Image 1 (tube, rainbow, N blue to C red):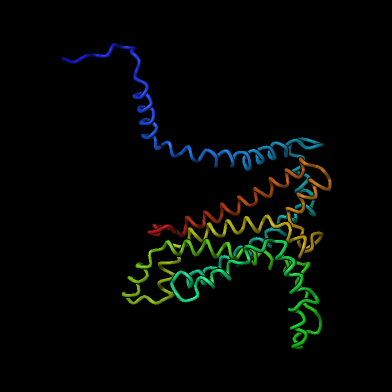
Image 2 (cartoon, rainbow, N blue to C red; image 1 turned 60 degrees about the vertical axis):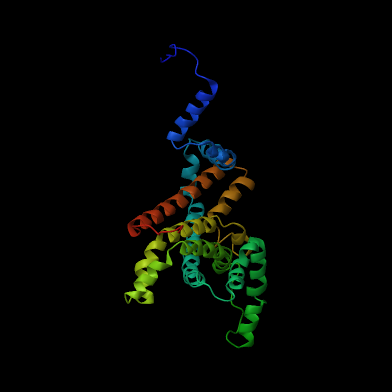
Length: 306
């Protein structure tokens, strides 16, 4: 004989908890996701809150309407040109880092003697930091540095070559600090591509270039796009290099310097926030273009973590 449960009777506590977990599991949520809570709090406090605070502050100028600081920035050629200056530094530096890292990472993904040593040598510059890198460039590429002394001793030049306190000083700094980062990322993507795909193509008579162009490169495209975006963001936010080995009042006056001067020299925080928002908007525009390019080229799956 079956016993019916009266309507409205309480469900046992353990059954209610089990049903709650079951309903969450059906939606793809389990208790392990609570481990993400500290990371979410960290992102909110360290990134989202400052961003939205700066965004609303940029619409509260000291004078004029809510968009007056943006109009002030774009109407001033000295300020507006910092966008072009920053792009002229960050885009070539990011592109060079990615293109230089691809052949090295492609060669390094195999096993050979001394691989760990070579990898260490290539990655060491990332540990130096921007200030030490700038100091090294001043010592080696300065008018009295080793590079110029060697050129003059070999009678290749009659006067020191100017490679610091200009565009090239900042560019070299971005390459030195950004290349190890790009190399490690691309190496990880290449390691995730199944090597049996290339071996199968080789058995069908495909040469090295054909295998790379038709198999490896299309599968590597998502990694190249991601690596370029990350290295571009690092290069676009250049600040110490532009001051230490560049010309912060002239050829290397980047947009981060304009924001710094507005905030800590003029103490105009709404204007500085507006410049920072413009900086972020330009970065997002470039990233969107790169990701759009990625979708037009990449079709398929890498078959691995790449």
